[in-house]
Image (spheres, each protein chain N blue to C red):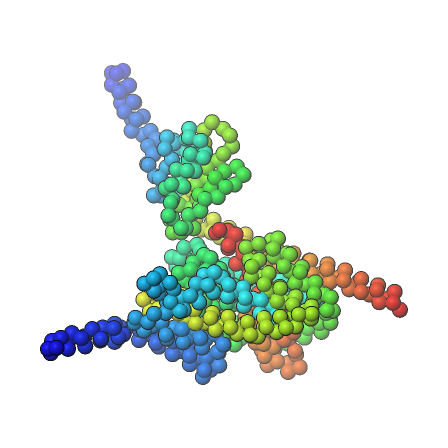
Length: 153
Length: 381
């Protein structure tokens, strides 16, 4: 009986254990990676490969894709899609730890709206800076001209 | 030579003509070209642009014409060369900005710099349309290039589209220039819808005179701010400010005259014909250009709304109220949308002169659209 229970328990644990597809939303996962966290919107993986190798893996995979961009940020390599792929970006952390963390996120309206709001705010920042610079410069110029005129008188 | 040989000879000659290659797409494109020529010649809508664009469309929509292809030796054909060096190399938009700068008086904007915020608010439509374009199935880069149409700034639209989605250049440029031409038709109903009669009658305090020194310093300040904050559009804005500095310095009158007249006219011819020539029936007659025209209209309308609403929001905090009609001028379309604000204002108060006040947001709109384009370029490149 014990053997039967042990066998059933082993079978159940094997069947219900984590089983990962080789891709997330059509994007291949890096080799030798295992998932840490997963939801329909993202998957977080770790791999023993160094970050540069994971980056090269995706760089090769995305060769010829004109809407995919590779970015180098301070703490991570980023592979971003601006086309119509269902995934949004791959963040490959390079924090110096032995295991490389890879985060793949799904395209979402939250990201698009957030990104657009940020850019619109950016336009305001540019014009507000120009407003401040113009006000300051013209104020200084007018004062200088006034003082110069006073001296002349 | 027997009869069959004569027939073969005639057939050979026939095949070298365009007659055997004609199809319905050519007919449709001739209709579109005819519409542009009609708007330019009979209605006087932006004739400087719509006429060469219309003729460009007409000319390339004949079979076998050697205009936009490559020669057997691999050289570009006539209009393809204009297109390649003018648009693909982004020379024409920048040279047009040089001429525009030489034509522009920044006095109203310097005298009332707070109207710069209206120029920023008017970019709202660019971002709303971006989202709409993504919903319609465009890629993010294409969506950005479609959204920028709302800024009603032809050269900036061409500049951004060439960078992000060159395959949409013809449709985007055409939509931008078409809507610019239709400012007097599109904007007034929106202006009336969003303002009360009291608001339309607001008289703004007269603008202070701006000294020559201020006008000389302004292009330097503006170029520096843009180059630091949105370097991606420095080629455009740098040329704009160079043209303006040439004008305001008053020491290079000949250069300034050339930039705003001869040079501008020359590049306008090449721009118009090249843009028109991108509209070959095979590429143009699909769902995307039609979507672009629809989304361009949305962009333009929402930008107008954004400008008016920003002016109204600013009025909540200002002692000297702004007439919200000038908010509509926050879309670029210089000076057409400023003129529309003036005309609308005078319908309700004959002695209300809004033109110079509206020039402030109008010029801020040019800078705002360039800033929005710079934001997109920074994001995607």
